[in-house]
Image 1 (cartoon, helix red, strand yellow):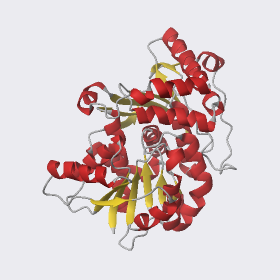
Image 2: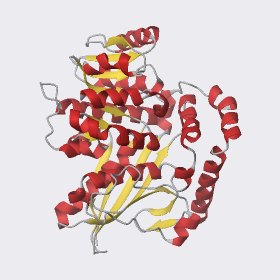
Image 3: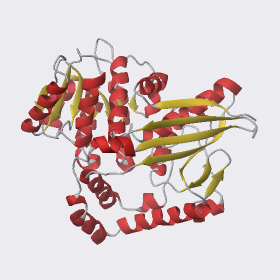
Length: 413
């Protein structure tokens, strides 16, 4: 039986996952790299062997992306790391098999509407089988972990609920693979633009809500111009990725209402250079969504840009140019005096960051796996399609060990 199976191992991020495993996991790990091309998989094993000749190298499994081909492999694994995208086009069979046979699963999708589909189709099935399925562990895991840490800190310190968390998050990206851009275009083609223009933060939450809440509207100036100012976080504006991250956080809240409370609110923004910069970014973001809603424009971008982009950007250059920087502030319910802060920062390539988060999450899931091959968790809240924060402090400690700075504390009154 394999401890970990890495699907899509020869893709750009998949190969970075393989490198992370070689560099950070025990040399005795029983693992496998899987995909459709035996030649490319063999080349990857050769590269990994040259990198670390003394460790147990991964086995190779060739599979087609359908349930019949995948089922024997998934049954033989304790944890699946899935890097096969676009997820909404290719990866539903992977989730299907994991949910049915009880194999734990992580991926690094940003396709929020596909995650919704997976929840609707497979959450109950995965609960019944004992599978823990965590789609979008990166980048949405950052916002989710920060929100969970703040809620936990305020609950432990003040014994009260959080009224609101405001998050400022920036992924400083300098390069994108052609595959990543194609995925964005395909998501718009498949799902349309209505959610991107008018996102619902409760889209991933159970219906009906366990604890019904009304998510209040933002101030008029924020709704019209995207601008908000926070004394602790500074100038803020509309975030293209924020809506998807908010949806993950609200799913966490709906799955753990006793911790988050019925009045919990979370909002994510992009840091802005000033008032006018915030307004400009807001309108450019909305304009981008409108442009991507037009089919001929998407086709033109795919033909003229995506097809000519580098499939393998120079990772050594990106390490010094890219970064993850998220800061958040939480307020205690019924009090403006008591607040907590949290931060999550890392300097380095974002594709390596996605690989790191996925592999660390898989490692935590592997620890949760008992000798009998079933999940040790007794709590149904931690089975099914869950969020990154369901992995708890062990996950936070492991990402810290991997070089990410994660901090939480209290703000002075």
